[in-house]
Length: 450
Picture 1 (cartoon, rainbow, N blue to C red):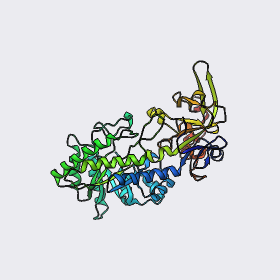
Picture 2 (cartoon, rainbow, N blue to C red):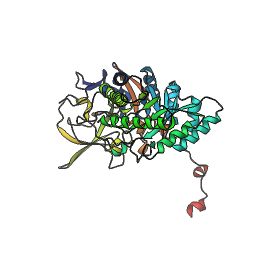
Picture 3 (tube, rainbow, N blue to C red):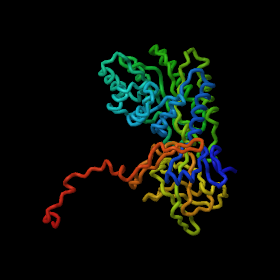
Picture 4 (cartoon, one colour):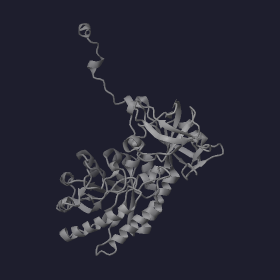
């Protein structure tokens, strides 16, 4: 059985190759740990989403969820592919604007957006703000009024539909007991609708939901669409408001291991669109524009992380540990979600996987384990380990734990690798450190002796 994803190759030297680039050469040129992103794969995923969704539903828009991985180069790539952008913080918005991304094509999300972030969004001309609570209705209306403009700010209202998809509990977001959205059951969502409609400074255009992440069973989207259609009909009967936009968020999963069963992106997007069409077809309700906001399923399987193997420790009869030069700081998903990955030794990619080992990170944490009991070609110090499907929620969640610099990111296409995020330096790590003068002054001798 082929032990690497379909869009990776093994070249004549037996090395792992992605989009014409030898991963061993990338490691030599840019160092490790190193995030590598396949530009060709990302672009194909974007195009498959746009085409698939349009095949399933007549009026659609695809926006990239920047929280999966965002930098200026990715913003430029998404703009080239005709996608909108979903941001969830002032920092993500700033990144998009610095990249020249059109603000009118940005959706600004977040369950606790600060006053400063909302002011920044209004000043920047963000196309649509997604309101995530009754408090935000009042706050945003006041800030919009303070701008002195007669133009109303377009908003969506985020709903909690009460759907619990089959995914990790930490990545479920659409259930009633959630920090996100206004619950449909109990009347909170309807109260939010009325509050927005009563504001002369806000323009309600529709609704947003996001039921979770790494979803492999598409049935959850159909259930969600049905709940929302009934809610939209209830809102129109109660208030006269007709939604123009229905945003189902993202959440489509990717293949992390060969046990993950999923449809190709184009087919999955088309099926989601078709389910929404089937829900609205029998209703006497104008079909709203359908928006999806995928993140992981656009960049996740396009990524691979390269590590250099260092210490190898064998505990006879128990386990062999293979230590790499990264770990939990550059990929916290294993510690957070018990995420499971597959990997190969990149410079031995064509050799049989003969030995089961546990890949451990270098931080001072016993729990810093990247992969448990994975079969690999016989590992040696200096080998390059390639961990697949790391394009999403790795760099974006990375930390400087143990004061380790965050890795570089390289975008590869047609045999060319370009740096899109530089490796952090030790100087950058200490750049924000401040030392009060009293800690620098020499203490009086009697105080020191006392």
